[in-house]
Length: 400
Image (cartoon, rainbow, N blue to C red):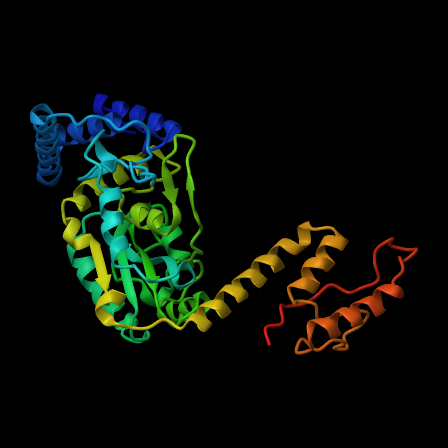
């Protein structure tokens, strides 16, 4: 058993502190690990990364020194009555490895990407995350982004005319075992060996984007993406939520909020062993020096103002109705029987009552459905065994 050196002991102490506090909590400890590595091994890649970071910090300090501070507005409400969006300060460079502050980038990038989405209603905007594949810690992210960019363009070539995509490539530091549970075996690169080295540290190359298609619903987009990128938990599509106002009065969230999120430099690291944390920090510093903002950004298609594609209002109304029905279906188990039946009835979702016979045609008029409902209510009673109303819950939402 080899005797631990003072450097390895200090690295282990710092890694334990990082795992306890969270890898995004203390940039100083990460930088100390990098500096010790440079002094001990003279790693040129990490030395260049530290040098670039020092130059950026000096640039920020010089800019702050010679910039005349602008008078602060009173509160986040502008003169025209609109509220300002919250600023997300996103460090540039290898943000997980030492930089503590930087200019606001994410909000500006999100606002710039949002201009290309003008005209798309929220129901046609699909925030998406796709896990693309593993990258070795000594690999090149510029080469990986170039390769996956070609794959994504081929995928979106099969979408409809007018599709507009705004995305950004990112990496998460993970273990080979976790990556192998997401990426199918037939897509493993030759160097990837999770069977013999399951605890080995690799980078998961993934992609965040806002996919907007004037004709496809969320389910249709998900179906096409899962066909192109098979694997469990590999494709995730979310629903755009409404923006809200924070307690400080700033607007946040919404569709633009997701574009701001994907513009931020954030890398996840979650490991059990100290040596994995250290290897992830060093590997991330080496990888971050192999690409830039231009390599990370991905854009496909033209805005509606340029493509002149017209969005069918009837199609929007239908998709919104389906979304409301799906939302009601998910909320039904938490409602009481009276609330449940009211929601089922007035949303047109009722399908089964006292058996599996289709007792009511959804094509009937509201008056006919009301008469049928009143006739049924007269004969309702409570079961002495279960003390519950004697109607069977609905199955799936009927969308005829």
